[in-house]
Image 1 (tube, helix red, strand yellow):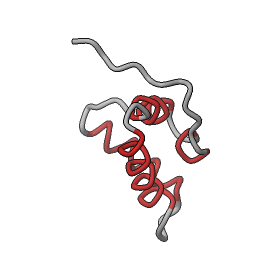
Image 2 (image 1 turned 135 degrees about the horizontal axis):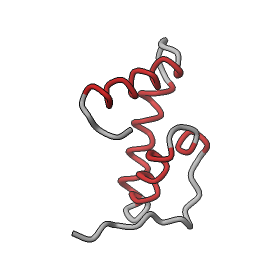
Image 3 (image 1 turned 120 degrees about the vertical axis):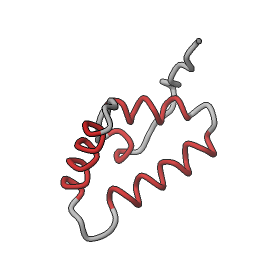
Image 4 (image 1 turned 135 degrees about the vertical axis):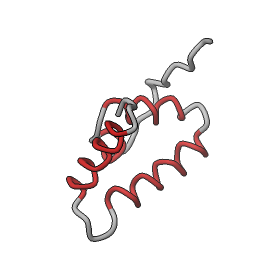
Length: 73
């Protein structure tokens, strides 16, 4: 099955590129549907940067969850 290639022409905000390269590729692939990409980036921003838990701890938790579920993060 062919894969959708990332749109490397799109400029992503810092918070969308500061994590793993997998997340950057995900957002650049979603750039083919800008409305979905914007909504998803807002959700990630709210979940990972908002609240009282430190962003670094949230990132570690995301990595651990991916390990437990045997998925690539």
